[in-house]
Image (tube, rainbow, N blue to C red; front, side, top):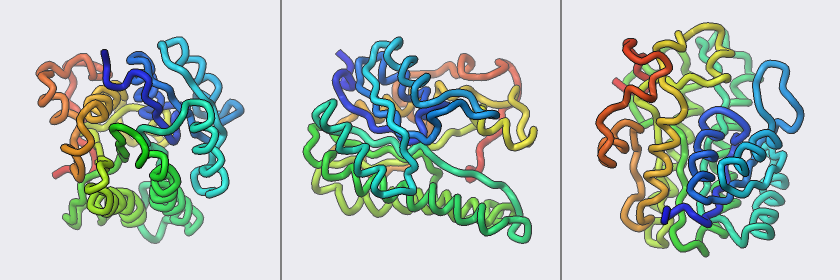
Length: 273
């Protein structure tokens, strides 16, 4: 039996993209999913709502609790975590997936965008972790998994989008700190980042910056995430995992099925030299 069967995953931004892919993978293994995302009504440019995600999760074999949550709002996260406990008996896993992106130079970055990235990426990740930790500390094999990159201080990763890099690295610093703080209490806190660019609807909104044919699908992140979440939380904390490396450890050697267009040269993701 899967180690995720019967586990409750609280996933931020799970209405689409990588968050939804993880939810569906875990659901197929018998997990309960808290869909904590903002989109309750159809978005004009992005597919999926918390309700359509819940339908897909239940069709995949899991149980779903769709909750409209803005992770910048403490009261909403507190209420969502309480509802998760009431419905499923607790929270075993937190996935910090929700993130805001704006790839622009410093003079072209409106402070509204700067604030949004820091409020969602840094504050949201820290806050969701803070709110879920009291529940995680009661769980049998608790994990926090954050989709953020290794802390690479090569100036090339700051040069073209300093604000975004600062916000994304804030998520990674949260991983570093919480892993050290809670390792003795058995909570695994890790980061996961894709080796290649992942094609999602949100990426498509960047205006053709990346050719989808040179990307992988979200499924590779879902498979890697579920592999990490199935590990003993006391033996795997404080790591900055790369999806492909995780799957190699799991015995996967052929990654062609993850390509949007198999055979094409793939784009290496940001922050990886």
